[in-house]
Image (cartoon, rainbow, N blue to C red; front, side):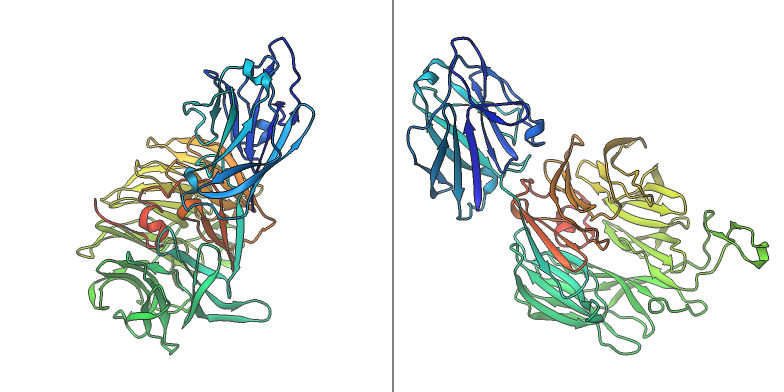
Length: 585
């Protein structure tokens, strides 16, 4: 049900309606309209200027104009209106010197809600004949030219639905329960379907952590189909044609890992088994147009490393054959902030000496990124979280650069051959930009889930292991300085998405937040939810937002957001398809 309400009368600065009294002297009058208390349209005489804010009725500055006794009354109990070709009725409730109106539409709107209008015609009283032509400003573009309407005869109020800035269409939340905790989501395109991989069960009564469920869900939250596969879940990777790849194994000891391509109808199209040693375990995979990049680990998770065992990065062709294979060194690690206390130190706390990893893992966040002719692979000591990032040439497989050991977390593709690598923990809080040659080009004293747009602007919500939170939304300037955005409560955050207007949207501390290009924050949705297992945000058609929280998929419609921005991270295909690959050019 969509509801639009407006009131003919004056509006106080606090947003409460009050009647407009007839007077021979000039008075300040306002005519306004609102949708779901978020979209506001102010009317004034021709040539007047006003500022329409999207921050709610208690902070809206209304356009003011002199109105010598003018006020508006309806002359009919019901009047027809039209919403994108769908008809309904306009009813009213009247007061002595004001009229309140309510529009309801039960039918869905047109697919292009960002440019749909409700047009409401209200007959003006004779007093309005003394006023000049009113004009209308819409909340989507406060600086846009006024829209004139005649004051003698019908008064036409135009209400935009789903405007790009400020909402408009009442938001709706749909929640889809998954079989278990989600491990990744992607979409075939901006209109769906959404693909998710999850455990088959993780609850007090059902616990199946060795089976992957691949679910296809439409944009209304309805499950289209589900498939099950043997093995721990990996994030889905979607091809340009909308088919989805899922990783699974045969359940043997040692297991054989296979990549299976599934069509939009849930049918298996083909399977590929990349060449690997019997003892190796697949740590991460990325799909490319001509094959795959796979990060192989020498043992299973939390298994002690045999002497001389190494991880390796391999490029495989479309049939699973090996194009090249490169061992990744992590034989000794150290980090000054890692401390130890033992009998050998007299139980005194001191910096831990260089040590040999006993277990090996891929980086928890973004372990494998492909940017043009460079690929970044992250491997980590399982006991401490200290690891390295290795940058490799995609053609030859040669190692271009290896970072110093550190507590690396979120990473991003900053353009072809360029990576942004974040470090957090053990006192570290940095983001470093690495150029095509693997050199550290710039470092900022911040870390978070950063976005990189097509102009190279880096921005995002900060993430620091400190409570109460000291984090803010940050913009990382090219010279190493930072612009401070609004402060952020909480800690756990979905990886954000960026729309074409420069607005960043993400879920944090039980709130769906949007921060625009001017670093103004607004809250789109609030929910009593403190779960810490979060995924990333997909920005889909008509401003639909989809993200996973633990074992649920949340879909929010009516956000008023613009389409997904173009940029290397995690926009373009890397955002929708869930495949961290940026091509050259």
